[in-house]
Image 1 (tube, rainbow, N blue to C red):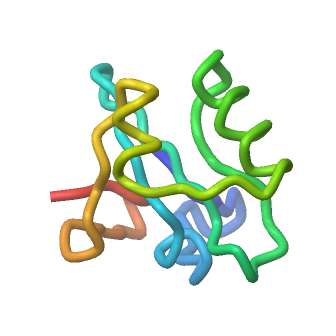
Image 2: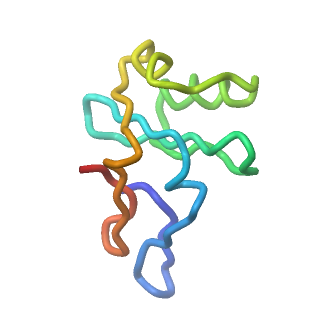
Length: 93
C-alpha cells in the first residue's frame, strides 16, 4: 500500500499532493507517485532501482509524463483512475 499510515488511528491519511501527483505502476503492482512540481515533498514508492532513477530525475527537475514512465517500463495512471481508501491507502481502478 502507498500512503501515510497513522498508527494512532489505524487508517491511511489522504494527502492532497499524493492524489495530485503523477502516478505510475510497474509489472509487480507497485505504485510510484511523483509530487506536483510546486509541492515540497518526496516521491513515494518501493525501495528499488526504478525508484532511485525516479528520485534522481526529480531532483534534477526532470519532466514526468506518460512517455517517461514507458521508458522505465511503467504504466502511466490517469487521474480518473486514481483512488484512495482509509483502509488501503492509494490505489487505482
